[in-house]
Amino acid sequence: MIGPYVGRVEQSIRTQPPGPRRRPPTGSSAAAVPGPGRAPGAAGGPAASSSRLRPTADRSAARPAGPRLRLPLRGSGRGEEPSYGGRRSGRPTRLTAVGTGVLAVLATLAVAGLDRLLFDGLGWLFGFGYLVVCFQLAVRVRYADLLAAPISGPIAFALALLLLEPVNSSGVTAQVVSLATGLALRADWLFTGTGLAALIVLARFVAQRRFHRSR
Image (spheres, rainbow, N blue to C red):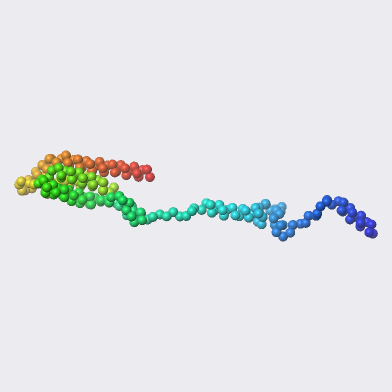
């Protein structure tokens, strides 16, 4: 009985390949070996861990550095200049239509009164002062009231002549004649100042329209 058993052992040893026998995977190593229905890189393997870490790195790279800070705009109304952080931008204060008319009358009367006081009449000082007043009105009026500058200038000019021009006789007719005479004699100052204000206002209007179209 021992002879056949020894023969079978020898035959099995001859048929097996040389080297150590392979053991079936157990524990964590079994999860790393893909099976017939498991794709490589499934849960538990190194490919799965690397695929889990990649989206986190991409999200951190695509995330912006931080929110942008926007300073509040104060005084950015229709007729006011915007200021950042409560500080003015350095531009001149804009005038409304009423403010333009009041400034035109007061400044023109002041220049006419000074000319009457120094030279006993309305001469070149009054005309040059009217040019300066028209320039300031056209520059400082706000965009919504641009037409107030070339309109309020001639009104202030006529009012200064009516109040401060010396009249020889009293009466309404004498006042009208004196006003017409004063306007005719000083027409060059009147048209020059009014034309200057109109040109500045037109230039500002065209520049503002181009600025809005370029936006």
